[in-house]
Length: 324
Image (cartoon, rainbow, N blue to C red; front, side):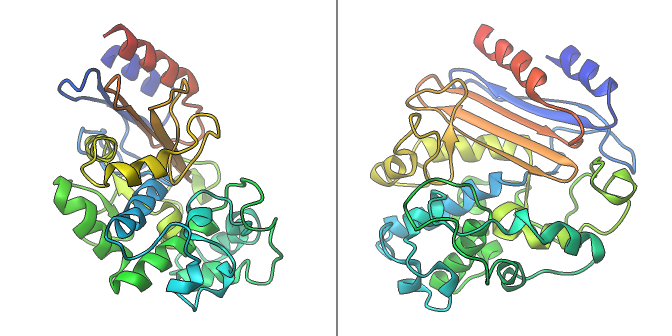
């Protein structure tokens, strides 16, 4: 595996961190390549931006409120947070399963606005304003359509119900119970993730301009920072009932693998009735995590160069898992 990663990293600008385990044996973390434009090498505890893997964490925290009896999945969002009028008529289940019909704020004016002022600090309200006057893509529940807007709303809903910030909820509900070392929502001035390479960024990397607008606009939909080991601990704990009651976890994964997506998770690859996964991408970074509680096979892949496709590398690493 190390030879494979070294070869892959030598052919590009960035690097890679991988976590593998089979039959829930001891986790293997391997790394290779550059930690970004400022130099250095990727280490097992290197912190990556993981994009939409954030959504699995946010979904899990809202589902904990279901376990606590505070909310129901088929409750309307505005019944718990009346100020979230953008989600009028949308249930919490529809929000988390991308069946709300809310247009995706990332599809339109966001990129030009972020590039115009990369140092701006965006609030969730700023983000929702981008789509506030747009019509619904469809009536709530009518179909599936991935929309980052759903999880900006979900983060606000979590904050409104708990009276705690997104970061505080993450710390108390997931980080502390699981003993995670380096998982947080950016920006966190005390910690800095490694740098990344992307042709969509000024100068081609994260040193070209401030990342503040990108990370604050991503918010609950994509601003999480984590490590390969922390993500491994999280997805294992999620699937083994350490974060949610069995009935609630069953709701989270209902419809997999036929529908391909449920509440904050997708079907594993190749699809199985029990494996869960999620993927994420933000400028400079690509992330993937997968776990099957029946086979106990785990796979986490983190890259800090979004100009390269991880598909062949993922296929080669999957072969290693299957042969172990």
